Every structure is written in structure tokens, then in C-alpha cells.
Length: 315
Ligand code: NDP
Ligand code: NDP
Image (cartoon, rainbow, N blue to C red; front, side):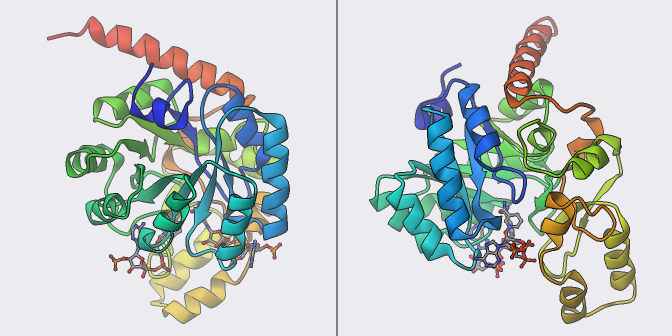
């Protein structure tokens, strides 16, 4: 398949692996890129020297295009941007913040910039700031999420209608069938997080992977809406947040309960009780851990199978 997204990134399939804190380092990113998708290093949880190391290793492991995800609220963002320039990274996905601040600085260096949004207002803003494409992320997505709770099914056609640049759909997509659904809504690519957490190359702790494998529908919930909304796998920490919210905890009290480094504790160190476990709704449907290349092969095969099946249902 060739479309604006495969051409923009110079990739074989319009399948993008989400930049995920603690889960997507160079090993996963290079494996996805080598398999014909676009791999992304999640820089949000990396100190600047660690990001540098991951970029260098990714470049050594693949000669295919890869990207870095830069959450715009990252504390040492200027250092990350310098590393991206120094290492000649060609594609950057920005998220969690205002695209007005850095899009033009990145574009001046010839970098392809994609911005993550969860509503129409931010989509228009990203386009007007010069983003080359948009990731529109619906309510089903894991981790940090929009406050509006717009589902992928409703969000994608709305965003496709609102902007001229290509739209990559995210949130609830983890199979070839869901990829086909997103493409039929007008998306030109898909971004998948949870599916790649359950890959052999993801840096998620094995305990976290096993917990995700055990999950079913209803195992996640968008939590901490007063602070920064985040979809969590239900565990002891999630229950503590829920109880605090029932007790009308203030923002400050919730911040205190969250503390620092919860996501690392849960997803990277494997503390399933007290850690923050960020995963999407689709996790309830995913039942195996595979190498990233096999995941991509399976998605492409299922996509083509489902497309043929649909042909037979033509009205
Ligand atoms: P705010 O939500 O107050 O945002 C600060 C400013 O940035 C606002 O003026 C807003 O613009 C703009 N802005 C925020 N997010 C976006 C966006 N996605 N696209 C375009 N403009 C944006 O505070 P924070 O900076 O602390 O938080 C940023 C937001 O990102 C939070 O809503 C958070 O839930 C979300 N988030 C998203 C993640 C992701 O994308 N994966 C990860 C982590 C957090 P305006 O004035 O036009 O409203
Ligand atoms: P916390 O504030 O709770 O903790 C910061 C964590 O980030 C620590 O575990 C720390 O590692 C690590 N870290 C890496 N670089 C730095 C740095 N320069 N300064 C301070 N800490 C650093 O944040 P979270 O764990 O909830 O989130 C980490 C980051 O990821 C935030 O910037 C957040 O906005 C972003 N994020 C982005 C998402 C996305 O868009 N894909 C999704 C979720 C979060 P150590 O413990 O080793 O000190």
C-alpha cells in the first residue's frame, strides 16, 4: 500500500508503533522499523544521555526510518531537542503540549513533525503550526489521554474532515481488522501502543506484560481526570486513586498520592500493586507476546483478509 503516510515516512506499511514511556526503547523501535512499519523511541521517560544512547543504538540496528516521541511537557526538552539535531533524527512525534512552541524550530532543521491530538481544536492548531501529519488519539488509548473522552470511532472522521494533512488513527487499534476500520474512517495510518507493549522487544517489565495478558474488557479506566487524564490497568494504586476521588480529594492531594516515578515503578520495575500501569482498552483482546516483526506480519495479513471479506459484503 502506498499513501501519503507511507510516502511521508518512506515506510512499507502505514503502521506506527506508539512512543511509550518505559516500554519503547531502541530495541522495539528498530524491530518495528526493520519490519516495514515506523518505530518510535519514547523519550518522555529518558534522561538526555539515555535518549542519546537509544538513538545511537537504533541507528546501528536499522537503516530504515525511525522517530522519536517528544512529550512537550518533558522537563529537559531543550536538551532532547539538541540531541535530536545532533544525531540527525528525521522524524519527531510531539505530544502532550502546545505545538506552537517547537514545531517551527524542528521544521527549520528539515525534520518531519507529527503532533498528537485528541480534539478538533488542537488538530487545527497543529496544522496551522506546520505539522506534517496528526495522530488523532481516541478515548480507548492507554496512558495519557484527552479530557473530552471522544472515542476513536467519532474522532477520526471529525479530524479527517477538519484538516488537510494526513491523519493517523490511534486508540483501540491492535489488529488488522481495527486497522481496516480506522482506514475506512479516513485515516491514512494507524498508531498502536498496547499491541507493541506485548512484543518481545518492548522494555515493559515481564510482570506488566503478564498482567496485560490477563486483562479483559473493563480492566482499564481513564483515571486522574483532575490532574492529567491517564488510562490505567486497574490495580491497588488505581483503587487508591478512585477512593480518593470518591472522597473528593483536591488536586494537591491527588498529586501527593501520585508522587513521583509511579509509571517507572509499575511498567518498568514490575510493581503491579503500587505502580502506575498505563495500557489501552484493546489490551483485553490481546492474548500473546510476539516478536514485533510477527505482529506486523499478522496485522497486514488480517487487514488484507478483512478487506477481501468486506468486498463480499458489497451492497
Ligand atoms: P494544558 O492542558 O494547560 O496545556 C497548555 C497549553 O498547551 C494550552 O494552552 C493548550 O492550548 C496547549 N495544548 C495542550 N495540549 C495540546 C495538544 N495536544 N495540542 C495542541 N495544543 C495543546 O497543560 P499541560 O501542558 O500540562 O498538559 C498538556 C495536555 O496534554 C494535558 O491536557 C494532558 O492531559 C495532555 N497529555 C497528552 C499526552 C499525549 O498526547 N500522549 C500525554 C500527557 C499529557 P490552548 O490554549 O489552545 O487550549
Ligand atoms: P514523574 O514526574 O512521576 O517521574 C519522572 C520520571 O521520568 C522518573 O521516573 C524519572 O526517572 C524519569 N525522567 C527521565 N528524564 C527525566 C528528567 N529530565 N527529569 C526528571 N525525571 C526524568 O513522571 P511520569 O513517570 O508520570 O512521566 C515521565 C514523563 O513522561 C513526563 O514528562 C510525562 O509527561 C511523560 N509522559 C509522556 C507520555 C507520552 O506522551 N507518550 C505518556 C506518559 C507520560 P528516574 O525515576 O530514573 O529518576
